[in-house]
Amino acid sequence: MYKILAINPGSTSTKISLYEDEREVFVETLIHDDEELRPYKNIPDQYKFREEKVLSCLEKNNFNIEALSAVVGRGGILPPVKSGAYKVNDVMLDILKNRPRVEHASNLGGIIAYEIAKMVGVDAYIYDSVAVDELEPIARVTGIPEVERVSLLHALNMRACAIKVANRINKKYEDCKFVVAHLGGGITLSVHSGGKMVDLLSDDEGPFAPERSGRVPGRKLVDLCFSGQYNKNDITKKMRGNGGLKAHLGTVDAREVQKMIEQGDKNAELIFEAMAYQIAKGIGELATVVKGDVDGIILTGGLAYSKLLTEWIKERVSFIGEVIIIPGENEMEALTLGTLRVLRGEETHHEFVE
Image (cartoon, rainbow, N blue to C red; front, side, top):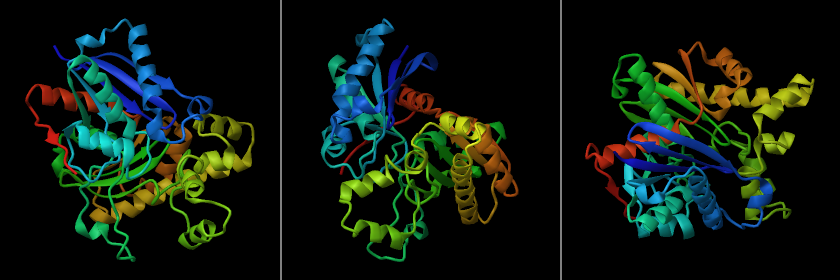
């Protein structure tokens, strides 16, 4: 029996799970409030704090880490990688800690997994990194030759959900065409065709999200950057961390926003519906990649629990294809089962090189 610890850091939480083979033993989300995270100047500095929280949680659940067979962390924003498993090595750690492409909580997954695995002498992995890149050449082109589109998205949950829906409709994933929207603290969308994610809207190209600004008018953003009021870090925070619902309504919690709406707050209703409107626009945009031939539209992530939000989206996109809602992240299972296939020899892990 293999015992696998999975670690999935989010912007304000660290989710962990323990599996014995395919059986989930426990799963827990460790919440980190602003006050706890404020002392850390950047995200990589948080890894020791979060590692201690994970170890404390395991101890409270009476689990001895010496029994672990492997540790898997959410794959961070690395240079472009293949889908599947990578063993965490020194080169990967250096990038995640010191040279991340983008500061993102997922970068902590591989670091924490490595540190805990090292304590007990087992291997640490990442699986379906945020940086999985399967874009077609035509999808990379922009109107500025120096700026090429890259693949940064919630690959892990998206692929897992797409495979799950393919099984439900008795088709191979490779034979399906899906548009998948991951609705979380950040929102990304992807279009799946031929077993690959051939195009996407990353969190700075599409809808705004609870804490991210999404796509904004380029000229106005340039004006803001050169206004003299902000430095690069200030603008980055406006785009990632302090944008979206947080900027408009002062909260990243959709449940609080819905309470505002129920209490008659018309501005909250406008902003929340505007987010749904932009998600629907993104779905329509990606449906054109496969010429409207879509087997299904999948809404997943934590925000997919919001019936209000998903109904607004469905109203606008149901003409494209059936809308399937798989709420939650489903990422712990995907991380674990991928690692389990590696341990069983059913899948070979990749070696990370820069």
